[in-house]
Amino acid sequence: MQIIKIAAPNSKIAMKEISEKYGENVLILSNSRVAGKNQIIIAADENSRLPAARLRAPRIAHLESVPEPDTVFASNQATQVISGSGEPQLFKDLTSLIKIEFEAVKKNLLAIMHSAQTRPDNELSALLDDSMIPASLMRKLVQETAGCQTATQIIDSLEQFLNTNLPSNARLTGRPEVHVLAGNHGSGKTLCAVRLAAKINADCQHPAIVVSYKAYKDGAWAQLQLLGAKTGIDVYRANDIGTLVTIASENIDHSSVIIELPSSNSVDEALLLNQELPIARFHMVVACDSYGTATSNILKASQLRFSSVLVTRLDSRGVHWPLISFLLDQKLPLLFGCASPDVAQPLIEFNKSILTDAVLQDIRQRLSDWTIAQIRHSATL
Image (tube, rainbow, N blue to C red; front, side, top):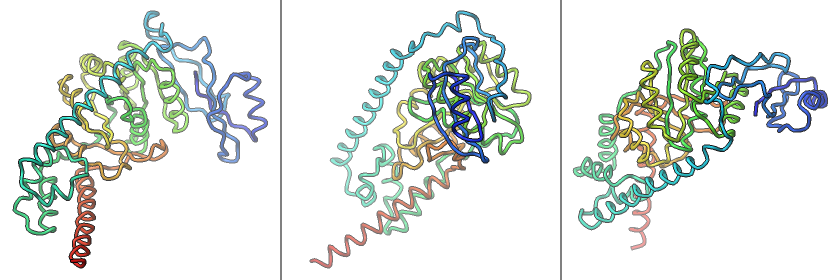
C-alpha cells in the first residue's frame, strides 16, 4: 500500500478526486482541516510500477506534486517478497522474547525470596518493595544506604550512587551520520526513527531520512509511510543489504540516514550491517517499563559497541528502576527519550540527572506517605 496526502477546498472535492483517481478501494486514515483546506490522508493499493524492494513515501502538499518512483537497485530475487512471509518468524521471535522475560522475572522473584529469608530488615528494601527494582540492584542499594539514619541521608546516598555510576550522555555530532536503531518487538523503534529524523532536521541544519530495512510486514511499512507523510520525513524501504548500502551512500553527503533494523534476526542483521557500513552508529531502543533482559541478550550476542540508548514509554510512572539496572549493567549512555505515542511530540532530552530526579521524587513521596502512616499508627496506640 502507499500513503497519499490530498488537499482540496472541501471534503466533497477531495473525495471526488480520490474516487476518480483511486476508485473506492482505499482506506481513509485521517481527514483534517489544514491551512484553510481539507487534508485527507489515504492508503491505496500500490501501483504495479512501484518496486517492492525500494519505495519512497514523498512529502506532498497535494496530489499533483507526487514525484516519479525512484530507480530499483535490488535484484529481482530481492524484490520477490511474499506478503506475510515474516509471520512465522515473528511468532517465533515473540515466543522467544516472552520466554526470556519470564525467565528473568522468575529469577528475580527467587532472588527476592532468598533475600527476604537471609538479610536483616532494611527500611529502604521495605519502602521500595513494590517498585520493580531487580533483586541484584536492590542488594546494591541496601548496601549503599546501610549506614543511613534519616530519610535525608537515604536520599543523599542514593543520589550520589546513581550520579556516580550511571553513564554520561551521548550527543549528536551535528554532521550527517548513519544511525541504526535496534530493539525488541514493541520497543517503539519506528516512532523513534521518525522522531530522531525530525530532531536532526530541526537541530542539525541538514535533512534526515528514514530507511525501513527488511520490514516484510505490510503493516509496518504502511505505518512508516503514514508517519513520514504526517511529519514531512522522507522514508525508504530496503529489502536487501545492497539496496540499503546504496541508499545510505547516495544520501550521506548531505543527509543523516536513520535505519530501522528488523526485530527478527536483529543480531545477524546488525553484524552484517556493521560490516557493510562501518561508519554507522548503533543505538538501542528500550521501553522504560521493560526488564531489559532480552535487550541485554541482543547486546551480548552481537558483541557490537552501541553508542547510546533511546528510551520509550517514559509516561510509565514508577517503573524506572529496571531501566536504571539495565544502564548500570551495560554502561550505555542515554541519548533521547519519548513519552507520548503521538509522533508530533518531539524527542526530549533525557539524561542521568533527569532519571535520578524521577526515582528520587518517587522515594521522597513514599517516605512522606510512610512517615504519615507511622504517625497515624502511633496516634492509635
